[in-house]
Image (cartoon, rainbow, N blue to C red; front, side):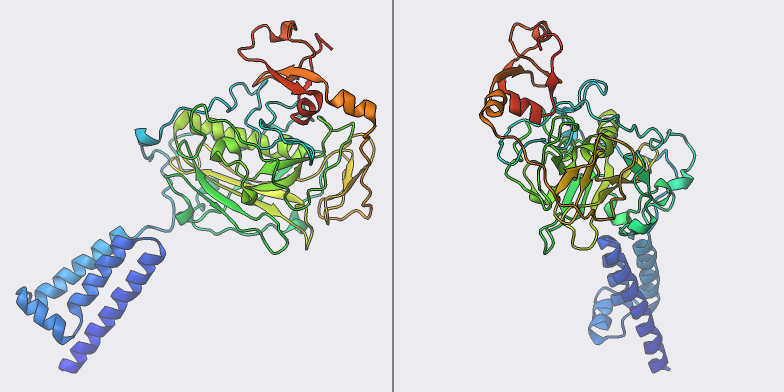
Length: 443
């Protein structure tokens, strides 16, 4: 009889052990501790029996206490799904509520100083990144912002129960004039462990080919730049596929940007090689930037956190990414404010790109008839950039810019600078590398 009881007790101990391991896998350390205590209480071991006697716990009390610990451990173990009640939100500590950075976007129509990249040549070192770019018509992600209400969010109810999955490019349509397409019905695929109300950033190591991989974060005011923090230079980083070229029909001239995966305005990351890829001006400005701005604006307005994952997608051993997958989900309101899953094309209208090494050639004026980014064009011709003396002299001429302006000026007395708080000298080449355009009043 005693042996039969001992077998039952050992079965109970095994159940408690399994529950403890499950709780640990879900980061439920308190639950795991409670399960271990419960299993110990009913273990048919001499040392446990002596301890129970010392604390005057008979078998009945031990079993009752073990059952209580079982329920306590279950309650302390994190659930595998996010509650659907969008009214539940966690307050953000005042200690992490820092003043928004002055460099962030303040006027969506005129100021894009929050964009991810310094558009610059290989040999140019520039401290400030482009403040604005009048680029190809930027696609506005109007369908990705959800209106907050008091009902559950059916389109994102399964977020929190998944894991990151690589995009199958065969399921992505060929580029046809729109900078991005939605993936998985626009629903991201985060796990519960990735949905945090405290800021964190994780960057993958470069692979064996030196390619930048996935970046994951919970972005909030605690990860954004501090008040008055300035962007640093990233010109020392040359991501895989960095084969820079200049074309007349690309705004600012230069084809490639050093694109942040998690933008500076969200992470305050500068020359972090694990966070920079070679991306076209079109990918940076028309594809990624509108979504990054949307996330930054949401954080500033609510103080909430956004789970944010950016994954470069490569074909085979290509050094240049065909595009990037962007996933985001607002944590405190269960996706009511931000919820999207998109793929942005790493293309440039009017340019044929060889994704094997990043070389390129002009395919005529910009149009919507671009090749699918999954294919590799056979041409590897890189256009030569003029280096004659007259061109160098023109590039080195002095122009005048402001910190957040969108134009460069040939004279300080230009009326376009009359309201500027600070005016800086620059070279024509640097101004064009930043994406600035000539002022119509003084040019």
